[in-house]
Image (cartoon, rainbow, N blue to C red; front, side, top):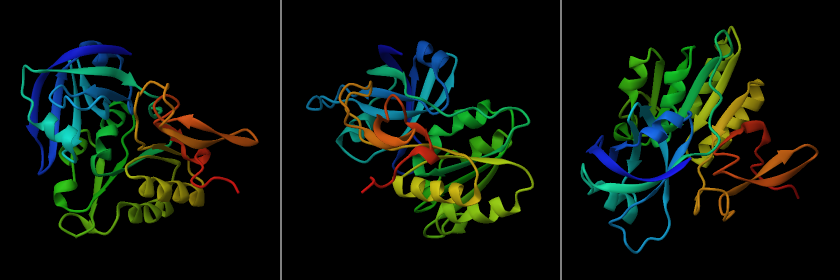
Length: 261
């Protein structure tokens, strides 16, 4: 983990409200594992004291790239920044995904919207190809499809309005695929909490392992403030764990979606 002011290499619109931001950060790129994130301070947003977390999409040599959606003042200010300007980052942070092993379970990646960003390094570094299930509200929310296909992965798409791929939600594709399975499979998921909860339920129903990348609000990003905790099973009980350090990736079997009575 390093804290650095890093130079923007490019900041380009991807689709509609989505942007790709490439940063010159060789130390971060070298150390990044799939599923980790950057904590970024955006200089033009002077009134904001807190950094913002972004999943690392790509890490190649001298650069790291993130995908982000313009949803508020912070990301709107970030979208106006240009090559040559600097941002402050801390990273790579967090506990990431377990990279599949040769000859192991077939990886099935499940992503909602820009949850795809957290999945790319996992697919790129996996010695075993699998399937990618990606969903969004509309065609403009489907990201990185061509990049995953270029890696040789089978990509399945759903949109809620039917404008791309199959109409519906992404988790509806999982049960039919798991029923067809002729060998072991493992789920990896990143997206909205409601989607992760369904993935965890499906994994339990079909008795397949699953790792999920949780989406919680963060303040410090380094495990001090305890604002991003979620309840997690431990032994015979449970405890709160920090998504910025113990996570954001957890074994789905250990996450408590509702607190015990």
